[in-house]
Image (cartoon, rainbow, N blue to C red):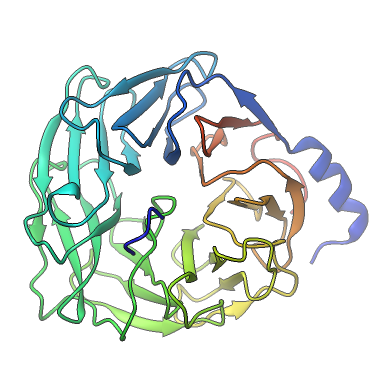
Length: 344
């Protein structure tokens, strides 16, 4: 939205001892909200002042650059294909919402989309594969604005407004961690909504949508779902809460086992508002991050345990289990938990 913003207890402690964040040197003081892990060596991040960062050595070093002509933009989302190709989205009303693309590791950037509608405000983007992607704006005239690409992000085409998902009064999306829209497989996509705390689901690459309401905190501009993550086409988690009350633990998380058709609240949720969530590949572990710290679930989102107190905005894990999270003033941390292991 328009805001600059079934495990036995003996198994829990060892898993948490193995899992921790290790700080890295980012070389920037920009506020970071976008992160995309490619593999154990490659990851990208993005943030304020048109900042894009990349590592190709597992985070031992990060290169921070400013996208030419974008020094005043806030890049809230970055989606990487590999070490050379990535897409970054800036937020804001009208032309402040843009998408850039690089195919040479960030040495040069191509502006592929500029929002011309002064009432639109883009929040996040995601890709099914290297060629097919989706971007989402807050509603315009009662419907979310959806952009689609099928040429690797060279061009973006708006979904016909008649097919775009309808919004409730006051509803929007949070540009908090680049995960208000997520994709899975070849055709599945989900959008998380602010205020209404709904999940919108598509099974045909964004052409048609259906909505489900969750029990996550809602009913005010600062409340709703901030982030989604899906392990496969059935198992998913949603996190959010109230960012104006970051330590309020009520109605923070939910989980689904039917692809988002129905959602159940967590039996024991994270400690407070969470803006980002991501699966650790190879099991039932999922990590959520927010301003008051991070939490881990070992049982696919049903229960959560405290993990760390570092202020973080977004989190991403690569298919091989490597993970990074980012936060304010250039914060970047790397996951040190054993990839694919631990309690199940």
